[in-house]
Length: 120
Image 1: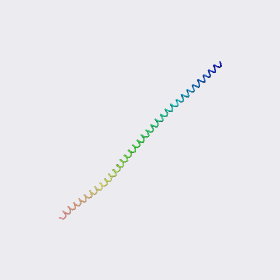
Image 2: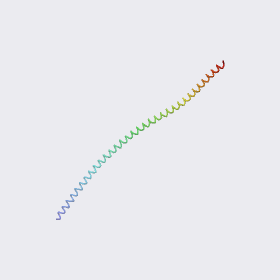
Image 3: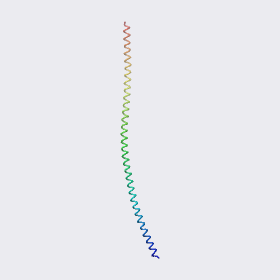
Image 4: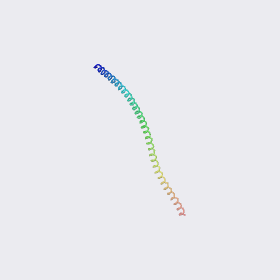
């Protein structure tokens, strides 16, 4: 009877060793698969980050170009406003001179007419 128990214990130990070995093998394979998938995820994340960075660079460049154009347009608008103010002042003084000149000419004509009739 004791040999039967020893055999049973030995069989149990052998079975236990086989199960441990299989578990270690399965764990190792699982680790390899996880590491492989983790590497793929890292690669995808890195690729996405690089693509996002490139897209952001392009967007920043587009924004810079648009801002330069807007600043240029704004400068032209300000320059045109200044030109219009200068023209308004010039036209005002031209109008004043024209009014004064025509008034002076009218007064001179009236004086000539009056002196012509007064002199007779």
